[in-house]
Image 1 (cartoon, rainbow, N blue to C red):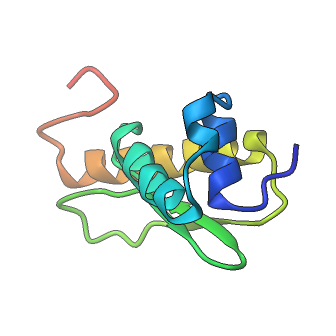
Image 2: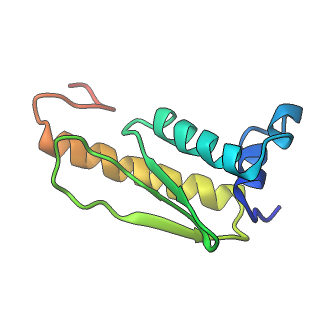
Length: 108
């Protein structure tokens, strides 16, 4: 299935429960921002616009500029997962470099 808006992404990511299908586009975007942040190790960033979405890692305490992974509308859920996983790895690695006394995702 090709994903063409936040409402579709939210429904597919949540395995299409009936309550996800009832969300508006704006509410779906807000939910995606929240779940992308809370559901990743580093607290990834989610943005959406008329062209597609972007996800990127976040590393508090770091000055690193982390790559944003852009997907144009028409992507698959697997492409979304791949981009989000990579963004989370980037953010976790940058956080570990900036905060060497801690180690998220490791043995720290």
